[in-house]
Length: 76
Image 1 (cartoon, rainbow, N blue to C red):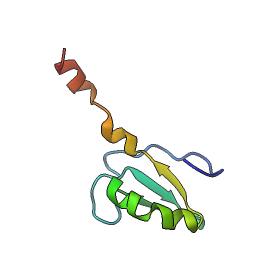
Image 2: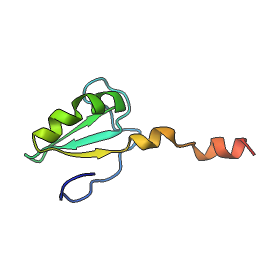
Image 3: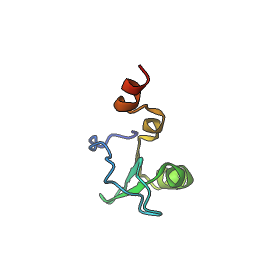
């Protein structure tokens, strides 16, 4: 996350992209106080424009590379 805003809560599976409805991994906190949620694709597409307008970006796309705990147990 960038900027000096207070940390926001982590995104969950219930959080959906405002553009396409896929699972959200990016939150853009707008200067006016609202926020927008994006999937990884749309987060990358709009991040530069949002930052240039003062938005604070919470990027959790690194979670896409995590292995779920149940899959780790199955590999043993």
